[in-house]
Amino acid sequence: MLFYYLSDEMQFPSPHLANDEGILAIGGDLNPERLLLAYRSGIFPWYSENEPIIWWSPDPRFVLYPEDLKVSKSMRQVLRQKKFEIRFDTAFDQVILECSRPRKGEEVAGTWITPEMMRAYRALHRMGVAHSVEAWKDDELVGGLYGVALGRIFFGESMFTHQSNASKAAFITLVQKLVEQGFELIDSQVYTRHLESLGAVNISREAYLKELRAALLYPTITGNWGEVL
Image 1 (cartoon, rainbow, N blue to C red):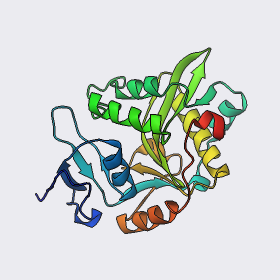
Image 2 (image 1 turned 60 degrees about the vertical axis):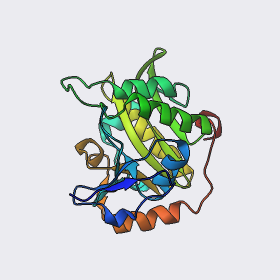
Image 3 (image 1 turned 60 degrees about the horizontal axis):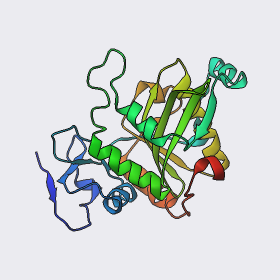
């Protein structure tokens, strides 16, 4: 298996050099400059604790076009009834911590969100480019997600839920807000049945990189999204 080992230089090999699994490179660090370069290049980190940092650029890529969002009749009812209060960027640290915990019935889910990863994305949040979307019920955080936004693309990282439909309500609300802001793409990285049910599809790496370049031509909406969206 061919891997590229990163040096201290702030650069990545071409995403097209990733192997059949989607692995492109190993090593480097998670400082904000490198992380943002990775996202702008169609690359993301994904690894487990006690492993070196692994950088990925899979083919195909799983994405959602915001205007193609599918909302079921039952979810429309949940949103109309306002069963959850959806907030932006009020509890980023708590959201990423909850995303790192194993899901019910799964012992290893979320283990890729290592303490190093949490520190890195908290740094991006302080820079105003990483955001949390939170579902609250009676002032309790019951679901949510976090990700990175650059230009008109949102890179979804992880979500969690403690109540049925909580994270789905947060995600749908996010997508609706992104449509209002003219966002062109949500990067979901790899296939999940949950996001497929909401309209996400696989596209080729080449198509993804083309759309990424176009989305990055626009200015980034930085800061607290609870105040600017």
